[in-house]
Length: 183
Image (tube, rainbow, N blue to C red; front, side, top):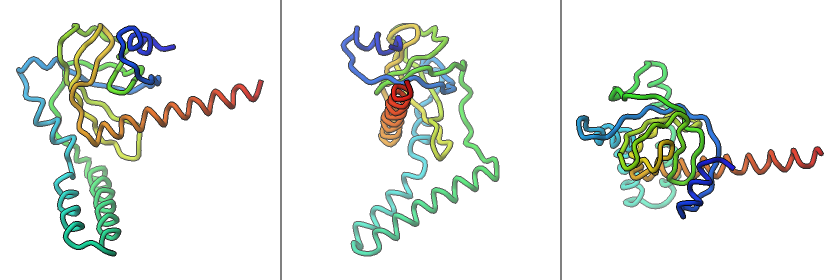
């Protein structure tokens, strides 16, 4: 059992925990830098266009719904390809430290080197392995030297984060089952 799972159980924070190895950058959120603007830009990129398509969809229901959804998905993929080809990455605020996320649970992170001050708030950026290289930005509070509890994450990122945990958990169950059957 990972130490994050032990920590969560001891502190009455039930969650499933999966081991990962994700690069992360972070800084103490002490008010010197306004991380909120970057957080909102990273979390809601493309959301205004999606709202436009959703508004259109609600005005004209019918066979256009599927077409609009396909157009939106195609637009996102083209935008992603353009950004990769142009090496056009969003200007990001330089963060103070780098580490590795070694385990995650729903709303919880365990960082390898840690060194966090309990009760302090931090701004973090990382990329979940998926089709796109979308940067996930979160605000978190240190519960121990290695454990952070996510206190602010964009709703879409939360869905992707939880789906990532469930997928990793299923992969682990499948791996364990196959390993047991081979014995």
